Image (cartoon, rainbow, N blue to C red; front, side, top):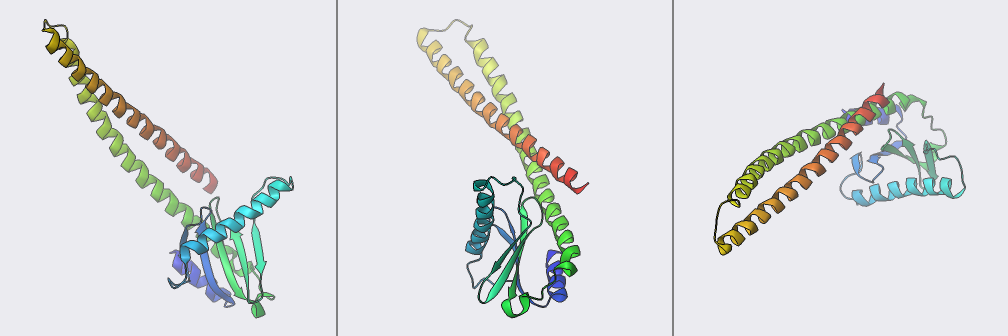
Length: 210
């Protein structure tokens, strides 16, 4: 779907020689560049450019709003970086002899559609993460239940009359099981917090699309 929109952008504006779609963290998820260039490095550099623009805004004490469009005009090419979603961007590369007559209006509807697709892809990824973490949480709950039962049984045994050596051995076993239970409990709480954050992210994306 995204590649189809990239093809339409190139059809609408033949002057575009390359398109790069990337997240704020520098990960490129679609591009017309081939693997003969360092694509991860390209994404990292584009993300750094956006970061520098934000830093200039901060240093100058301007209102803290995100960028909309950045234009880099060089000798051979002009690169226009446009913000798509909250975490996504598109960079359009033009040859300089053509870029002075560029009109971005024809691709606005495609940019809007690309933003929607990106948000859908991110939502689907988050949903998959939620489902996986919920499975992990259920498995941990089952282990916690078993450890709780084991610990309860050991504590009951401690009330029985044993020799000092047997009682010491039983106490150590009880402490070990309790440590394992505490570790599992910490893991479960961590996953539950991660689930809350992921669900908040889904809700945020849903509000943004309304």
